[in-house]
Image (cartoon, rainbow, N blue to C red; front, side, top):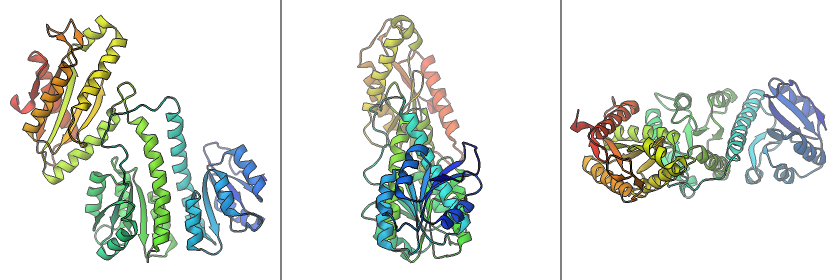
Length: 452
């Protein structure tokens, strides 16, 4: 075993190349000569030893491995693996992905494509490790159900101007995933924002806005930049693939489609999505109350408001504030204050009647409720239900303006938003309604339109 480290900078990407041919190792190293720390092994034993010692970001198993079983080694390495092969075989490709490989490339590889693909896989691997380290600092909290939690079927958005191509992909993937489709770039961007698919399968050649432009736009938008994009194309030009990878795509699938290859690649990427979602959910949960936190609220309200504008639907937002909560903490202590917040969070969340109704801790003693497709009357019914749920807890509060128990005030904005309505304005209006509810004596519901 040996090292061909090109740069001691610890931020560089770490790669272990495993191949019996020194010549092939040198060629692969040259492709990764800038910005990668490259180590190599020429047999199975050294490869496993170096994995334990160096913990590289990714392993590349070369095409010259007659002395050991590359599939067994792929499974043993326990890290992201890129398989290089002399002759591409569908069965071997499927087997590689099932054993944990993240890519399968026929030799000879194009230097730029190889470099970009290795880099893309490392970025994803490091993101997963980073999230895992964050999650290791504390236990997983049992959270209230929310729209962001994992669904039974993962979502795929297929974007292609050819209906026949969409039909072919739907036949290949429809049994395993929930399929959505768009036939142009503008529609694709709107659906990506609204449906939040797990992966987007995107055609490169489309009129008006081609796949590269769609990808570039999606990767610049906060609400879609995290979604993985797989290009499908009949183009065999390497520069087209390299361009897509530079824009942030994670893979390419060539037309005409091979059902086995498409399923194998999708399964591999979806497993990574599933893993990242599980880890990401920890950063979306309020540590004290177990419901969604402000970060998740920001994502949900942006998505749901966009959908309401596009579909011209009713939309309602509540801001709920516990009355005189500082006085509660001063009198009963912060430990009891924390328990009070937990009980109220549970009471509010339990009042929901639809999975799409969303409850989050907005900050301090304040909660937010997003009710998509809910008009003024529906909002009034739900607000009363939540207010009653809080008072029915009967939590003693001797310094709460004569009520004797913990109460809350609710500010509501309920409307059919137009394209001029922003999230910040919507929150501001609900906050103004909440302030009015406080000034009118607390323990009540106020709709902003009644006082504007």
